[in-house]
Amino acid sequence: MDSGAGTRHVLGMSRITAPNRPPAAGSRHDATVMLPDGRRLGYACYGDADGPPVVYLHGYPSSRLEPGLMPPLRGVRLIAPDRPGYGLSDARPGRTLLDWPADVAALLDALGLDRVALVGMSGGGPYAAACAYAIPDRLTATALVCPLGPPGLGWEAGSPAGLLLNLGRRPRALRMTAHMARRLVNGRDPVALARLLRRGLGLPYATPDLMQNQFGSRLVAGWREALRTGVDGPLDDACIYAAPWGFAAAGIGGRVSIWHGLADRTVPPAAGRWYAAQIPGAKARFLPGEGHFSLVFNHHREILDDLLGR
Image 1 (cartoon, rainbow, N blue to C red):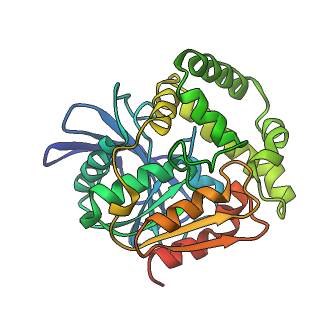
Image 2: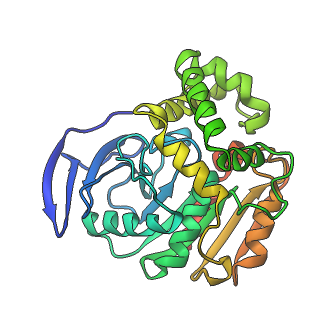
């Protein structure tokens, strides 16, 4: 993966530092947008510059590097922003879930895109749902993949996602845990760390060589990038997940699909079932034997083809 040096352009109220050349299939190019309030929003582009645009919202705690977990993307232009406080994006103290759609809309404006398809993976699921609620006119379709659900509904019992929600209500313990996680991620061999966590994360068992040589190291690289500048992003996210979200899923518009692995130990399938029951007209697929990361790795092409109506 490589990243291109940038040239700066002025587009409306947003200033963008963009790659000098369009991304080739399988490569990654990083850039930043200057938002109207002066914050930087970082993002990466993958796939084909002329393909239909898809915005990918990363999980927790991850970054714009997350799509690099998948095989090279072809026939699609994937745009993956860092949420505030992650990677290349400036923090936004006091942000809420419903602040995010305006950032996405500003990114689309800066890139000259009217409407896009949207994917929210795991901890990106609530943010994708917020976009489908707040800016449905900018979205052609939304896919929620193993999405984290709202607090207090029982889906989270006994899961790592439930532990995260509990920590989100205890700021001091959350901060201590975040700093411990940062030290762990930065201090361990990436493949060894991924292997240690493999069972709970649902990594792709069908590809042991890839997992050992590529998947594990890329997964940890995404975590390291998320925490490179500090823990503000993950801390804010955890508190946001654990608080009232500020909108009802029943108010989500447009075409929505839900994908969840029945072997997901990180975010239980009950979260996906909740979304399916709440979002009007949502189409859900629950896949036997698929865990949290194996689903998106093994079925990313199906997800994208369905999202784009192919």
